Length: 332
Image (cartoon, rainbow, N blue to C red; front, side):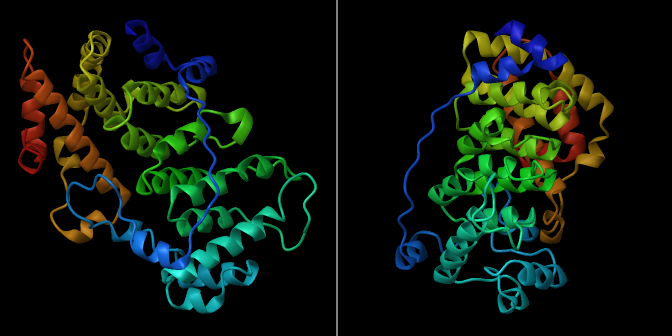
């Protein structure tokens, strides 16, 4: 595993990612009545929120970015009516389930090399609506099954960076980040590129604490596959990766963790602590940047806690956490 760190610094070849990627594809039929859905998923919060649910801008209930966009999308997609758009995208569980099923069928009929329906065509925004409407892993699995048909649609359709970011986010919120990893790690099948650093950060965050270290390593390898900056060059990702290695506490993982510490120290030296201060009120948590600072604060706290049990000097980390206010917000 120590040699793996060298690959992570330079960027990995696709074969490395696929060597670590798990191909456990479990498909289950969707069986949800509106009553069951209402009991189980009246609200789907984001998991791992350490500072409360302040990120109103990331609510899973927000279907549209603006009323104007909503009305335009409603006109192009029969399954998203204008009256829903005018109400700001709020749906009760039964209506939400109906909208999901209608839109899923709408998309399924219009993609692939020989679609059954050609007009109106599916726009990229339809995927974002499906991600937002889904409230269970089973529903997201049903959406994922359509991905291969999208890439084979006339014109070789592709997913946007915004699609990748929202897909990774919703998989984390629905507690199925392993599904997102499966998709991004199997490009030949799904054709869904991890083209956004923000999506990669989200994917790493959703996996590094509660899933096997192998999954974190796979995500790190995907940075090279999709030509993202090496994981050791991004402060937020580097901190989460180091925290994951320390957490699993095996001989090999600790070796990698110690090897990445110089890179982490260098990144902190180059980063003004004041730029990473956490918001002081609820309004500041709306943007994703605040969430990423939270991830950094928690992962650095985990690293400092782990270093406290080892020999060595780590005042550089304690001092940076104090100067950024992270030590007060997330004490060790």
